[in-house]
Length: 125
Image (cartoon, rainbow, N blue to C red; front, side, top):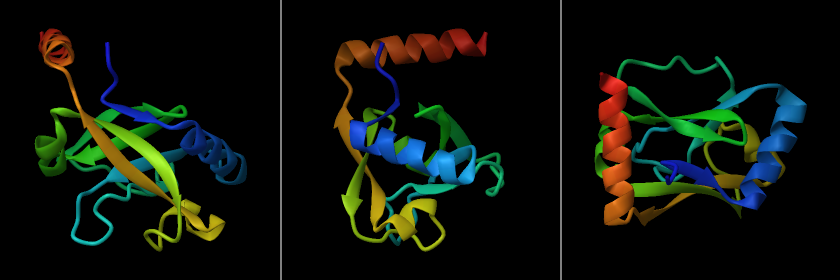
């Protein structure tokens, strides 16, 4: 079954580097107006997760949350976290490395959507 969120090898390598420097980390995709395609990376626990945030999955052993409104737009796609040169959000841990995380996506196949919906329905029971 497809994961709702995954990461490139480059992103996984950066995640490992950040965990070595900062300890456990977490991600949040807000979908705000600025750098909306850039997930923010924080030391785990530095961002309070609200009732409108959904745990989409894990990348590199780190939790990845997304705001419900953003999830509603992207729920038919797999979120793929990559790394590009340049600075992202000023509070995101990777900024000082001269790179930033970037969210890309691909549509799920009809079969993947059926599997994901069935898993989510089973989890509600």
